[in-house]
Structure formats: structure tokens, C-alpha cells
Image 1 (cartoon, helix red, strand yellow):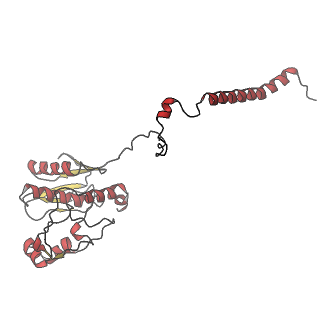
Image 2: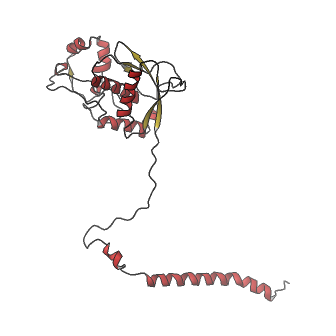
Image 3: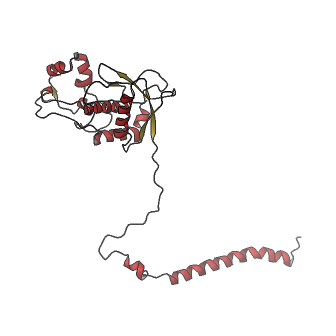
Length: 268
């Protein structure tokens, strides 16, 4: 038989009694707060309410820290070229690309740098400029050029700026807009062959062939990726197509879709 003392009984009763007391105090504090709370707001609070019949004030949202944009940095190496040629390319990139509201930036590396790079520029004195399409298909540890720039043609600074920006558009992954499936230009092939002085296969690849766009963006004649088209270059064309020397809003949209949607990373 277990012996029960007065001390044991008192100790076993302390815990339930403490819980009851705490509950009573909490209920009393809620009652006092309710009686003190105004039913229709203080005069200052009432003045902030919208008038009858108007749209109610939106609910206050908690303050959230601004979303940090993560930039994708790509390194550029010059394989040759004069100081003037290099400075011209740097100015085009800083003006037109590194200022875009897209999460990508180009960084120019010094000559002593031998690490990975996704854009390797080689300057030439003849032939057309060229760039690999897209950055994700480039071997970053390779030594071969990924972009070839002829700074002697076109001779006009404005056209040269367009040419450099056009090739960097290819490096970013943009394709020719005059090869968009919805482009309705009826090319005057004999005139283009005379003007460009190249064979049919080159014109077929760079102008005539239709290239499906990975995104459902409309045909964009203002794109820097659109060739200049004179009136005689296409049948029925009454006004020339002369895109501005900048990325169009459509170009920025396509770059943003590639680098923010995850498509570009998944297309490797």
C-alpha cells in the first residue's frame, strides 16, 4: 500500500492550479483590450477611411526585400587587333549590351588572361564579319575564335557599330529577323547576287532560308538582326527597311526570354 503525505498532495495540485490561473489572466487581458478598442476607429483613423461608395483601401502588404538579380557574366578575349579596334568593340558592348535590363553582362579580359572565355574575337582585313550562334555551344577552354570582325568594312562608323552589334546579337543567340517564318519579303535574287557578290549557297543560308524562332515572337523589322533592305532588293517593296543601331524592344524581349526563362540553359 502506497502512503500519501500532505506534501505529496500539495505538489500534485500546484500544476493544475497554475494552468487555471494563467488561463484566467489571459481571458481578463483580452476582455480589457476589447473594451478599450474603439468600435469605429479613432478620429485620426476615421479620416483615413475612403468615402462611402468608393473603392476600399487595399490590404497592406508586408514589406519584402527587393529581388536580387543574378547576372550571368561572360568573358571576352581579344586574340589580336589594335587598341583602336578593341576600344571600339568595348564601347559598343558597354553602350548597347551591358546597359540592357537583362541578366547578362560581358567582361573584357586582359591579354595575360588564359582562363575560360565564351567570346574570342579575331580581327580580319577582308571578308564579312561572323559569330558563332549562342554562347552555350562554345567550348570555354578553346583557343579558336568564336567571332570574326572586319573593322575595314563597312567604312562608316555608324554602319560599323551596327555590324559589331549584329554579331554580338548572334553571340547572344539571336537569329536573323529577315529569315523569320512570318517575313513576307519576296527577294529579288538576281539583285542580291549582284550586290553581295557571293554565290547562291551563301545567300540561301543567310537570307533566303526560313529559321523557326524558339519563341512565339512576331516578325520584327526594327531588329538589329534584320539586314538592311533596299527597295530593289525585294519585289513590291516601296520603302527601304533600315533598322536602328540598337537592340529593338523585340530583341530585348527575346534575350530576356532566353536568359530568364531557363530555355537557354536547357538548350545545351
